[in-house]
Image (cartoon, rainbow, N blue to C red; front, side, top):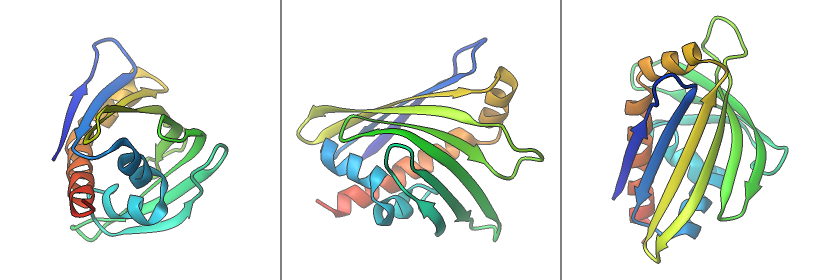
Length: 159
């Protein structure tokens, strides 16, 4: 099982999320940093093209989701820090915007609640409140929830 709680603070550029997942911290972290696992859940479980996935300090990523409606949606970012089983700090950008530069800085902290439960505490900051609100209005929470559910199913099958 995987659960997501999203908070969008008023008068802020932030989006906060807490994912609670029934899997060990090591398995959850591995699903974030290993390309073959990441590609199975991140885009809501939809097929994904991976152009680049170099998950290390200073690495970068570039993927395209192939959605059920037949469209392709590209995303990219840079990894600033990948601290084994602790945290990932990265940027995130949707490439379908009319102009580049609507980048979010994201920090995901991985916390072991017990041997079988992990929390992922995410703090995302947009360049400005308008960008943050646009992200929220785009259906971000629904897509995030679908990805979390796909992650839960992937890790469930791994037990």
